[in-house]
Amino acid sequence: MTTKAEVLEVSVWRGSADGGALETFEVPARESQTVLDVVSWIQQFADPTLTYRYACRVGMCGSCAMMVNGTPRWTCRTHVQKVAEGNSLRIEPLRNLPVIKDLAADMDPFFDKWVEAEAVHHPTGTRHDPIAHVDADSGARQAADAGIECINCAVCYAACDTVAGNADYLGPAALQRAWTLLNDTRDGGGASILDAVSGGGGCHNCHSMGSCTQYCPNELDPMSAIAGLKRETVRRVFRRRRDA
Image (spheres, one colour):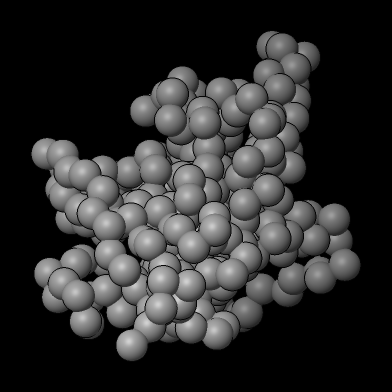
């Protein structure tokens, strides 16, 4: 039997888009235990109806992201001993997204924002054309590469207070991808991207609070990417006035 010192008090959000509440489980404490281990234990041994997402368990897919004690995190890479408050944990679905059930958030609004931001590749060639040369040392390529490791986990989206207060805001992940493509010499959608990100829900809504950069598990810097979009949209306004 486990003693009280060997038990975690874990409050887990249960419910759907119509509402819900926290439910508490007693989970055995283990050495090197991750938050995802805790959630999996609850589903396997306490309540098989608990709904959540995960795939790789090694920080490659991002699908296990949840709110842990109020902070968005990859649960597979978050060790309990680093985040537990005493012997307590609170686990909830990602903020700023609708809930499907329990810990599984609806990712559709997150990806819809990518499309709205024109954060999709706009090809300039076909498969029959020679492979385009990319200058790896150019400033544009380095700007593009800086955000290329985004794995769409939505941690930055959940961390963003602007998203919380403005449903139209495109969000840091979509804007960072837009910046990546704007700096990719192979992409032909520069004008479309600048049109999309300068609109009502675009980059100028960002308050530069930096939560997106602070909490990104891959140590990317969406705030700097958004600042780049702000500069380019303003420069385009001045160029148009100059050329008018």
